[in-house]
Amino acid sequence: MIYILRNSQQFGPYDENTLLTYVNSGQILIQDRARDSVTNEVTTVGKVLKRGGLKPCVAQSGGLMSQLRQIGKELIVPASSLRQHQWLQDKRLLMLIFTEAPFPLSWVGYVLGVGVTEELAKALPVYFLARRAREPLIPQTLVFYGLMSGIAFGVFEGVQYQTQVNIKLDYSSAYFLNVARLTSLPFLHAIWCGIAGYFISFAQLYPKYRKALYFLAIAVPAFLHGTYDTFCGSLPGMIVALPVTLIGVVLLMTYLRKSADYQSHLRH
Image 1 (tube, helix red, strand yellow):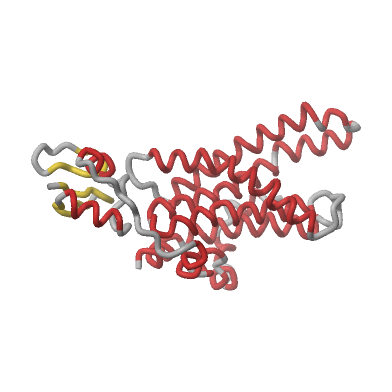
Image 2 (tube, helix red, strand yellow):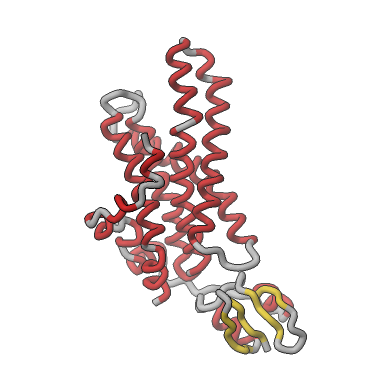
């Protein structure tokens, strides 16, 4: 018989077949710690099932669009919290804020060509860490990993631009772009990947919604990223680009503030 250990609490005991049923329904995770009632060995649920020759298959709660409807708009765009200006209470991230193709074709190109590609590249290390974790990781932890992955990507990209692109420009332009590439832009990459980490954490905690949550992990930051890139190249365009940066910060702050409410919603 197997006991499940989660958040300093113990549940069970369960036999392996019952454990498989709970895993397939999304109530127990394969990363949850498991203790053998006889030997007291502590391992993971996934390893217990593997030793028993049992292969979990989490039942998905419908297709992509069905899952998005069940998750609800409030998880993606927390309108009620934004209208109440709750994000203004947290100043930590707010303190850090300071094309040839016609629109909207340029916007589509930036979102799908740049946003999706770069956000996917940044999110892959976060996804790998989440999948390899020995126990389920809370949203705050994966947001932190996302911030680190985004900063690393932004700095690497900035150095590449310095040595390959900006070096060909005049001194004033090169200086301005070098400063931007190594200060504000890595911060933006961090925010966008932090959002990806947030949804990846929910996909691990609530696997029956993982199609929709993995989709949102790339779609939301790619939308922000592509929209920013579309308009940031000109002074008039910055009227749109700068609010987009603020929206990303506010969204991440609101997501973290409301994470307990969102977990309760997905749990039921």
